[in-house]
Image 1 (cartoon, rainbow, N blue to C red):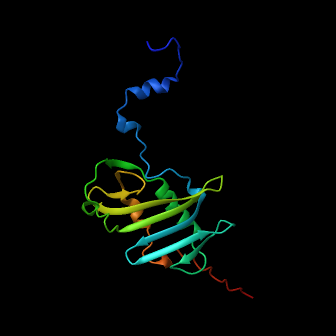
Image 2: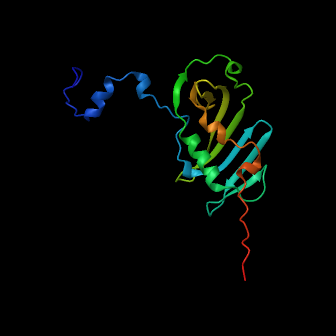
Amino acid sequence: TTSLSKKVIAVESQALADLSKKPEELREKGVDSFNAWDAERLRVKSGGLEVALAKSGEGQWRFELGGKGEANSSLVESFIRQVDGLEAVEFIDRPGPLASYGLDKPRAEVVIRIKDLEGKARDVTVQVGTEDKDKKQTVVRNPRLGYLLRVSSTFLADIPKTAKDWEKPREEKSVEQP
């Protein structure tokens, strides 16, 4: 209740527990909020590499740029889930010049096109800046946000070095014995 109203309102007990938390504890830690299974396109730029992939109606990922034919869908989807799961270990709320974080010329850029249940498409963009190898963290930026995030840098290992890294492995032909 409040002295400004005669109404009495019941709230869930969790709301009261949240009142004692610091604002940083309640803050959304994700780089963006999306469901990895809603991804329909992926573009990755890293170094001199640029690959673009699209998901077919059957759920298979195919190269549109940088590679040929079908991609290894499990690797592509695993990478998208990693981006979806990126969480801040620290926020940089008032970043100075992007160059001081390696984001004036990002070491990598990931763009995931998501289509929601209503058929609306939007792009999730994550730019990757400098890495602190000792802390195993890297600075990332979502251009839609006014702040930067430090996240675990483990996902960097799964950014392809060449398009072949994500190509679907050729199936071995078995030799039949008489």
